[in-house]
Structure formats: C-alpha cells, structure tokens
Image (cartoon, rainbow over all chains, first blue to last red; front, side, top):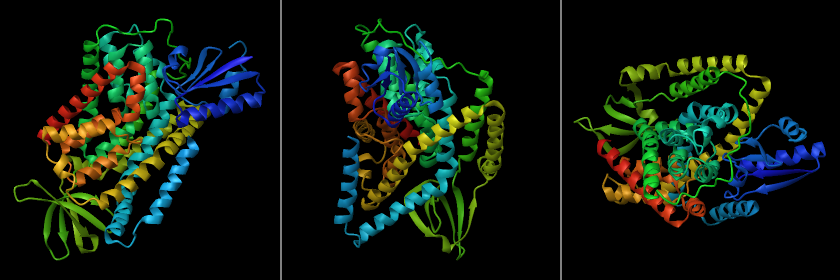
Amino acid sequence: MKKLHVLGTGCAKCNQLMEVTTKASEELALDCEIEKVTDLLRFADFGVMVTPALVIDGKVKVSGRVPPIEEMKRLLGEEGS
Amino acid sequence: MKDLKKFALLAGVFLFAYYLPFDHPKVSNAILEAFRLLQWYALHHTLACVVPAMFIAGAISTFLSKEAVIKYLGPGSRPVLAYSVASVAGMALAVCSCSVLPMFAGIYTMGAGLGPASAFLYAGPAINVLAVFLSARVLGLDIGVARTLGAIVFAVVIGLSMRLIFRRGEKRRNDVRIQTADTSSVRPLWKTALFFLGMILFLVFSDWYNTNEATVVMNDGIRIEANIRYDRRDTVDIQEFDADGRLGSEIRRLDKGDIAEVRSKPGFVMTVHGMKWQLAGAMGVLVLLMAWRWFSRDELKAWMSSTWEYTMLIVPLLFAGVFVTGFVGGLIPEQAVAGVVGGNSLLANFIASFVGMNWYFATLTEIPIVEMLTRLGMGKGPALSLLLSGPALSLPSILVIYKVIGARKTLVFCTLTVVASTLVGYVFGMFA
C-alpha cells in the first residue's frame, strides 16, 4: 500500500492538488492512503520547501505546482516509488 | 470553514441590500464612484497589465525550475549568495501569496537559517510580477520602482539584523534534508531565459510609463496645463500645474464633452508611449514563436491551465477589491485621511507602516487601496510605507510566524519591519 501525503496550508492550489491526487488514485484504483498535512511546522518533516507538494512513500514527487491528471497518474503508477 | 466564509459573504450582501439608503446623495454618489473606479481599471490596467501578468505568473510556475533557486537557500550556501537570492526569490517563487509562509518556515528550519528566511518574508509578497507592474501603473512609476527596490534592499538589511541580533540559538533541524521533486529541464537555460525576457519586455512596453502631462484645450479656448489623473469614457480628472510648475493638490473633474483636445507634452518617454502597442505586439509575436518552436503541446497546456488558476485566484479578489475601495472611498470626505497620514512627517510614515503591519490585504488589493488613500490625502512617503509593511505582515501571518520562530524573534522582526518601512517611506517622501 502506498502512503501519500498532500502538503499545503489550505490555499486554492493545495486543495486542487488534493483533488487531482484523489481523482487519479481513484481512476487507477490504487491501494493507498492519502493524508492531508496542513500544519506548516510539519512540512519540514518531509523536507518540503515549496507548497503545494505531494509526497509518495516519503519521497517528494511534486513541489510548487499542480500537475495535470495524466502526469499525476503516471507518478502514482510508478513502481517502487 | 469554506461554507462559513460563503455564509458570511451572503450575509454581508444581504445586510448591504437591506440597510443601505440608496437614495441618499452620498450613497448614490459612492456607488457611481465605485463603478467609475472599476471602469478606470478596466480601461487602462486590465488588458495592458493584469492579463499579460497572469500569463507570466502561469509561465513562472510551470517553466521555472524552483530547485535551482532553492539550491541557493539551502543549509550550506554561502551567506552573500543566500541573502541576495532570498531577497529576490519572491519574484520566481511567491507567485501565490499562500506559499510565502511555508517557504519562510522551510528556509528557517532546514535551509539557510533565520536571516535569509526573514529577508525572503519581507520582500517576497511585494515583488511578484503583477505587484511590481500594477504598482508602477496605478500609483506612478516612482512609487513602483521605490517599492521594488526598497523591498529588495531592506530585505537584506532586515535579514542581516535578525541574524546579528539572534546570533546564538539557531534551531536548525539537522535530521531532515531538503527534498526536491526532480523535474529535469528539457530546454537549455538560454531558451527559457529568452522566453521570459520576451514576456517581461511585453509588459514593459504595454505598461510603458505615460507622463500624463498634457495641455488640455477646452471648447471655449481655455488651455489648462495639467496632469491627467483619471481618464474615463465620459469624464477626466485632472490635477492642474501651478504657475511655478508644481502640481496643485486639488483634483478637478472635467466633462469630456467640454474638452476640445488633449495634447501630450512631447519627449522621449511619450514618443515610445506612442508606439508602445507596436513594440509590445512585436514582443508578443516573438513569445508566441518561441512557445510554438520550443515547447511541447503538453507544456503549453500546463502553462494555460496554471494561468487560468492564477486568474481565478487573483482577478475576482482584485476587482471586487477595486469596487469596494471605490465605494468606501466615495463615502469618505476628501482630504479626510490627510490629517493622519498626509504630508511626510515621521509620525505619518510610522502610522502608515504600523497599520500596514496589522492589516490583512487580500492578494494585490493593497494597490487600489493605497491609490484611494492617496486620493484622499495620503502623502507619497506614507503610501510607500504602507505598501512595504502591508503585504509583508498581517495579524494572521504574525500568528503563524510566531508559531514558527517564537515570540522574541517575531517581536523583533515586526519592529524591524515597521522601522525599515517607516524610514524608506520617509526618505522617499522627502524627494517625491
């Protein structure tokens, strides 16, 4: 099972990233758990500087932007990432 | 939370409609003023400035590699580099104001430390592309330039002061490493640089400074040497020059039907102004060519979609802000704020800068608000003070900063911000 973290303080772009992530994981029927992290003191736990960010299994995959859904599916679908 | 906001908005509109005495002459005038201000922005600032700036903001978030910038804000970077990059990084990184605070926290806890983090926080919100160009257009070239330079220079000063005051007790987290998403660039740097240069030049030309100095010839033959302040479809507001060539303080409204001709004062600036659309158009064609030759379809799609995101984020707030500002400004008697922040005393600058520290300005609305305040008698110095401290800090953001760096550092940072903004405004006001 993959562990996804969506990081952002709750601004419009962060909510968008959450939406795209949820939608992509549903379309892929991905076995995963998505957690939204809004406390900016916790961002440092992941080593993230620029939000919104997506962390897959502890690795930062997206930072500072909202990728289109196709790219998101590719990111989520990658094996062993 | 989201629903609560929507409810508050609905309730606000309801109370407005329920209680407002629309037939009261002051109120009907204020409503008219609100639409007049909106028209002024629509006529003069939207197509030339706001729209292109949205495309640039979208391009920055899509094509600029943030990793390259962050590299210089990391823990091992050389101080000189870290401070200078932090003070200008807002241009590339802070296109969305909500990302400023997380980045501040990131630079503080795992990056180059308190100094560069403070520098970034002070300058970041003031130097994004739209803020720079819209300030220069709406408030005047001098304030626009002073705001940008003041923010960058004093970001370094404030950052260094923070570092000096809190030499010991840096609380760095060594257990984490900055992670960046690897987005390797598909283009050589010079192509990206040229692309952005083309877009910025488009804005420079489309926003080319209009001196607004003109000779207004009335139908009855009277000639008025004046500065055109607000040019709208039916009326024009002018500020007359005195006999000794200084601008008078009073603003007069003329009916366009009474004006025979408006002749601009010639000069280099105005010559370029006369052909600004050709120059901007040439830049636009170049940018389109580059986009077509150098970028893939997917990249262009991503660019357009992030441009649209920014538009949705900024435009409704900005224009609602303009409208509300026009309305409130119409209710406030002229010269009302002159007593508090008129002229250029140290106290006036301090008040402006202190209010700015506490007040929360929604994205970019500080520009129409300051413009309205200057119309109501605010001096140029205090206007700059407010522009500098306003977006950098607000009560909500102070609370977040307090959570990140603690009470003492927050207090010192706020004090430094207010003092620096006051001084910059004061010095600027002496020359303006």
